[in-house]
Image (cartoon, rainbow, N blue to C red):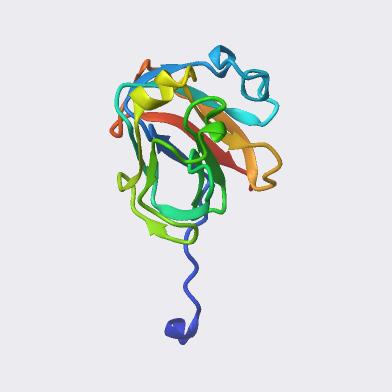
Length: 168
C-alpha cells in the first residue's frame, strides 16, 4: 500500500572499473624509481609511461584535491567515496608547478574523460626527472575491499586498467 511513499534507494555499488587517465604504456608499480610507490607503501595500482602530457578523469566523480603549489598530482573521488591518486612523474614536486597546467580545482565535479591537467613531458625530462606516473588507490580507505590490476600494456581512456572492489 502507498508504494509511492517509500523512499527509493539507489543500488549499492559493489565494484567499479577505472580507465587509464593518461595515454601510454602500463607498467607495474615495482618499476617506479621511488620506494613509496614501488613497494606499494602508499597503495595498490599501476604506473604509466606517458606518450602525451594530458591527464583525463578515469571515472565520473569529484576532484578531492589538487596539489596547489606543485600542481603535479591530484586525487579524484568516485561516487562510492573511493579515492585515486594520479601522481605525474617522480620528484616533480621540486618543479614547483613549472610545466603543469591544471584545468580543475579541488571540489570540481568531473565527468569520465574530462581533461584534468596538461603537463610538459619535455620540460620534466629536461630537468632530469622521470615522467613515469603512478596511479594508485591509496591505502586506508575503509570502503575498499581490494584492487585488481586488469591485464593490458596499453593505457588509453577507453581501456580499464584497475577494478576497485568495495566492502559489503
